[in-house]
Amino acid sequence: MTIEIDVVSDVVCPWCFIGKRYLQTALERLGEGATVRWHPFQLNPDTPEAGDPYLPFLERKFGGVERVRQIWDRVRQAGAQAGVEFDFERIAIRPNTLKAHRLIHRAQEAGNADALVERLFVSHFQRGEDIGDPETLVGIAAETGDDPEAVRAYLASGQDAEAIREEILQAGKMGIGGVPFFIFNGRIGVSGAQPPEVLLKAIQESMK
Image 1: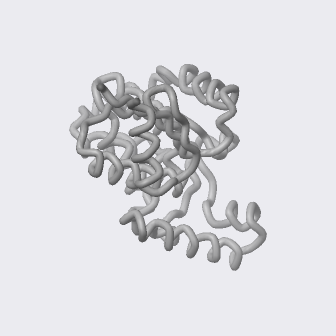
Image 2: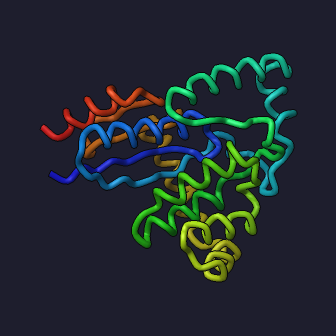
């Protein structure tokens, strides 16, 4: 049977990056293809459109730089198990992810957004690029084979912005309060960056 996987995530969520890699490992172990659809979520929907300084925000949220570094260390350890190397110190801007989610939506409508999602995670967490900046997004899309001028015009148009906001609201109404959240074949939901064996078991159960 066709395996359909819906993933609710945000591209500034480190656990979503880890979860993506774990899902990839689970599918490799399964040895069968799957259709993966990416759905938007915003950890911080109140982020200014132009973004704001990253570390000061985290210090306010978690209670100081020492606490932030402890959290970074914990996420780095988890990331290492998934093959993800985080470089949090390179991140200067906490971006608003609405434009990035619109770009994912556009790629998905054209066929497959997986490469773009991967590149957005890499851009933010490993290269420290501002993935809320339209020109940065144009460059990212171009790296995944999209047409720069078409992407630039799309981002400037505001197209699909309301649809993305509505989809985020719907996720909340479904009870999804944290990400990543995986839905396998519309039947089984798994919350969090669970290890590959947990995801693989859920996939297999959803195929029965």
